[in-house]
Image 1 (cartoon, rainbow, N blue to C red):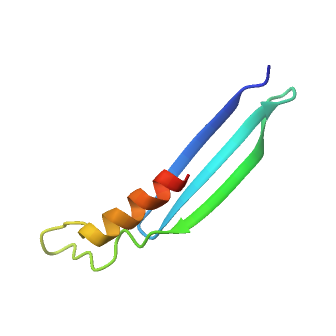
Image 2 (image 1 turned 120 degrees about the vertical axis):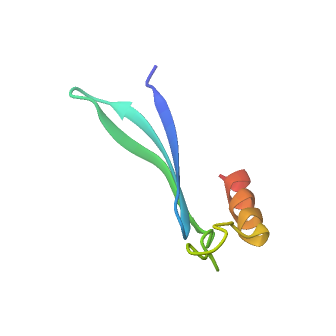
Length: 68
C-alpha cells in the first residue's frame, strides 16, 4: 500500500492543506488534494503592542481547519 501524508501550513494570512501520496523510485510526492483558505490570522495584529491574535481571526482559522 502506498503511504499518504497530509500537511497544514498556517501563515499570517492563509492556511494551506496538502495531502499527497508517496510514489516511485526515487520517492516523490503526488498531490491528491490541495486547498487554500484566506484566514487573515494577522488582521489588526500590532507587533509593538500586546501581540494578541484577535478572537475573530482565531475563529476564522479554526473554521477553516475544521473544513480541512
